[in-house]
Amino acid sequence: MAIEIKMPALSPTMEEGTLAKWLVKEGDSVASGDLLAEIETDKATMEFEAVDEGVIGQILVAEGTEKVKVGTVIATIIAEGEEAGSSPATPEKAAAEPTAKAEEQNKEEAKDAPAEAQVAPAAKAQAAAPTPSVTHGDARLKVSPLARRLAANDGIDLSAVQGSGPGGRIVKADLTGAPKGGAPASVAAAPKAAAPVAVPAPAAKAASASPTDYPTPHEQVKLSGMRKTIARRLTESKQTVPHIYLTVDVRLDALLKLRGELNDALSSRGIKVSVNDLLIKALGIALVQVPECNVQYQGDTMLKFSRADISVAVSIPGGLITPIVTEADTKSVAAISAEMKDLAERAKAGKLQPSEYQGGTASLSNMGMMGITQFDAVINPPQAMILAVSAGEKRPWVFPGDTLGVATAMYVTGSFDHRAIDGADGARLMSVFKGLVEKPLGLIA
Image (cartoon, rainbow, N blue to C red; front, side, top):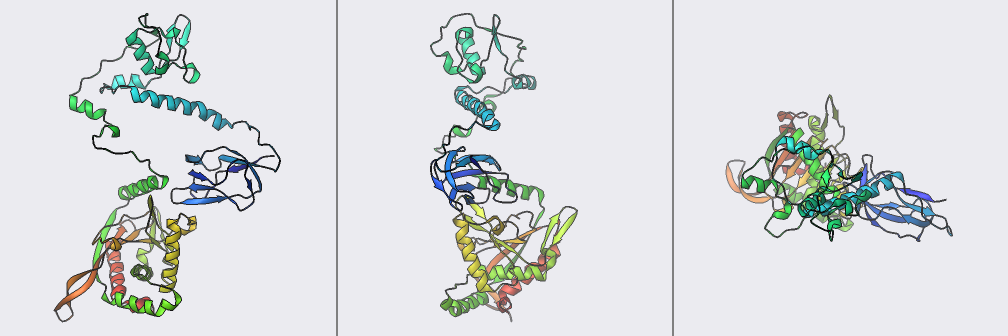
């Protein structure tokens, strides 16, 4: 008996995904633990393993298929020597086939349909009504709007045309070679259309504009599931979360000196600490010292966290992901460095597990390595704050005693959810963070 392989839920919130690539083909023998496919979620591309052994009988969902619902049967496994046969289509698949065919036909016809001017609301309401059937004698014919219009213009008798569309529907292609000059078929129960409302030429042109009308050479790139999720979440964040931004100017000289000394001491262990590793540690300690900022807004309640799990923005092909350094407030700098290196490598390879990028109590985004001197980051809900770190640069600096010199400094901006965090508390967090960076021995104490 065939064993069904279903679309897995690779995270607690996953409802659908893209079957990015099959790693097996029909007839391949598989054992438990063998890789079957690559599944693209809204955050990463993950490998899907077999839990049973046998032979791949049928692949029911082609690779590249998007929006495959969790629980959908995507393939079957049969026993050695058993024939796959042709299993009956599921009701969902059977219903989808004619629908997909009709949608494809409509897309083809839409390419040839002329753009129409704006019409009055009454005319729009009529256009939204079901397409009437064309009658000829006692027969009722299904005709697409474009085919009906072309037939009327050319005087084609639609009762003599054989429809090739879904359910025998007459489409544009069926009119090729049909005799012209006959009496056009009448439309049954067709209400009188309201007269179009004339609009100025520029407005009419704008109404019919589409991406393909742009004169500049271009290509249309389909959005990945990750990019769609990023667009949706960041739009929701800016629309629903009242951001407040607080910026401090931080001197880096002492931190850079400490980093050099740490790397000298850790070189024999193959560990190289980055400035970002030290900043992750500093933010973790600051959040615990200012617990009013280590929170999440939950409507009628608020979550207050007892440890700092820092989500770190990592750029990957096609988008952004935020692997989490858990317990950043208590881990050593060396441990953070090793963990961050591993997380970043696996994030770029699409190998992170959901638990490694879902959650976090606050985020850190460092664009200093790209030369950005200052920016404001968008909060990643449901978190209530994110720290935007810019590039360190040589600047004139007034030292104690009002002496003027040159220092390496950077701007750091905190974005705070003002529903959960007051400005004064956000300012205290920024002050503690600045103090830890400028006197960094506190990071390793």
